[in-house]
Amino acid sequence: MAAVTVTPLAIPEVCLVSMPRFGDGRGFFSETYNAEAYAAVGIALTFVQDNHSRSAAAGTVRGLHYQSPPFAQAKLVRVVRGRILDVAVDIRRASPTFGQHVTAELSAEAWTQILVPVGFAHGFVTLEPDTEVLYKVSAPYTPAHDHGVLWSDPALAIPWPVTPEAATLSDKDRMLSPLADAQPLFR
Image 1 (cartoon, rainbow, N blue to C red):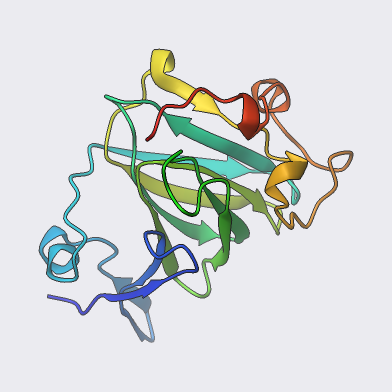
Image 2 (image 1 turned 30 degrees about the horizontal axis):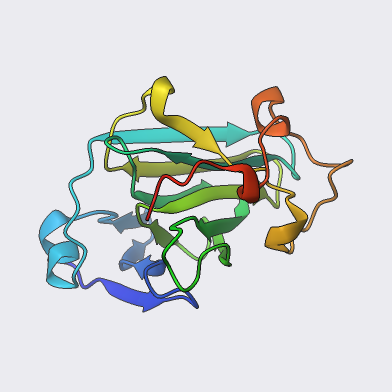
């Protein structure tokens, strides 16, 4: 069983996760997820779906997304090509860190993952063209439970490395509301 390293971020429920990567003349091998190894470090989640996104342009923003109960999702996110700035925003109304965010740069080169628990809106911006992101989720996607927060909400003060004018977004993400207008889904 590979050794898992967990590093809590400023909001400790969100953490960076590292698993070893073993290289030789052929390339490398890495066990990117092992339920037993994760449980041994306190991450006992059941993942039910894997997602894969590719963003052609640097400056592509995806998010800030979340699903409401009973289909709320924890996410385990990693980059397999390129680099992103990953963002998690605490949307748990009773939390002392409600409305606060944490960021982490993830890259294929660094080979770290971020664990975003239930109760957080999640998003990222690509820092390189042709970036590919894989993420596991703990509940299936359901359109009726799909929600989001406006990525550029000034009240969140997220230090995005792209301006709203230069960002590439979906029409859906452009129309999201600020956190102040979001339904109180997580208490």
